[in-house]
Length: 368
Image (tube, rainbow, N blue to C red; front, top):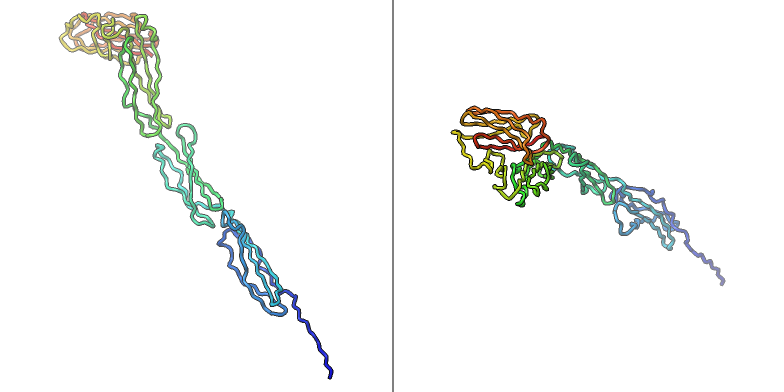
């Protein structure tokens, strides 16, 4: 017998024929990435091979989930281990800033402490509601306006801003609640003028300052004379509105009431001169002396009541005690009015004296 044989070697080295992968794409948000799909390859021996992709995300630990690359790989392997693959890259890149859905409108207030407003709100294309912060800036010196800048930031650092302007229109000046009345001090006794106080319709930023003008100088105390202090108080609020008031302080020589001429003049009311304190009042009705205007520019008006008709002397002295004016008038019973010309007096503090039958009444006045 005889035989023959044939050997057929089957060796599949052909990889499956892979289909095209879905096209690469770029999206804003991770939620915009489409769902994966299965792909089918055709193998020369095994026919259709259908697989699902393997997905990986780079970087593995992203700072922002909406700035990554999603990589999908489909791998087709036939029965002999031949393989082919296709890849799709989906780029997630959020570059859209949040959008404000509410921003308070501009408005006007009288005081800075009245600035109150609701918070702005914003949404993001990827993150939904986002937090909003703000920063305030006063525009100009004092108070003119305030700008509140709102900032919304998403997870990827995209920002958007908006602003609200608040105009402050405080035109009401402060009001003094206490101003020291005209004061008398003595050269040899330490003294301090009390501080004035004030209030304002707005609570923030009220200041009180003062400036002193010396009529003559404190050195006069060593020469046996006194001097005068004119203290001007200025109350200033946060918006620059101001109010002023004046305190007059008469500093006389010596230590107290028996220091010499005019020494017991204290608060501007009619008093007896110390050198004439023994004189008696011969009138039979209450005495009073008033003056206006004070401060004076051109003329000083004197008003006083007297009990009977008699001669009166009107005298004006400067702060050094020098007599600058004297007039003798006849006063009638009742109310009298006399005029003292003041045009020639220089700016300063003066004492006007009314004398009759040993009685003396005095008033202090300022010449502008």
